[in-house]
Length: 166
Image 1 (cartoon, rainbow, N blue to C red):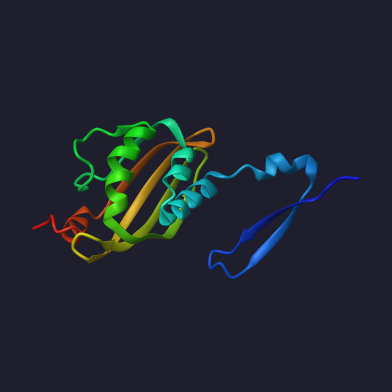
Image 2 (cartoon, helix red, strand yellow; image 1 turned 180 degrees about the vertical axis):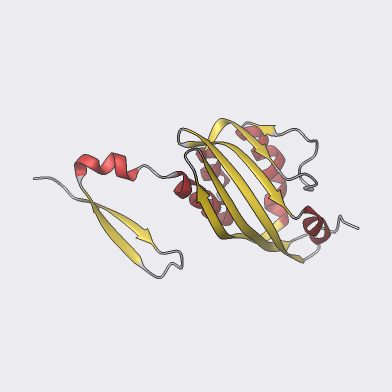
């Protein structure tokens, strides 16, 4: 007698739960996440403030690039490795934002990449300004890990929200 395995999924709105039967022989293969699912989980974990889970999805040598003109970017070089992302981004940005979220408007998956168009919203704690900024992310993969992240966004608007623009 074989044991059935069920995968639980929830609709994007969170209102519908679906259980799918997975045959034990195929369970390992079907439980592997798609690149799309990995990115969706990263966004969910980011909104929950779960940096450890996000870093787990990254390759040890991830190349992380914020948009040109982004206040947190610093020099033009990408950050390499999980520790650099943790120190230069999560430790700095995390405390400064309340209710940060991304609304995914379009998500395109290819063989080795996911491209996301969306909008960031949140409140910049130091001055209380609300953010609503257009954004595009390019996630590239090596096997089942994120090998690079490249962000494009309206940096002029972000600079104004953070009180750093003209």
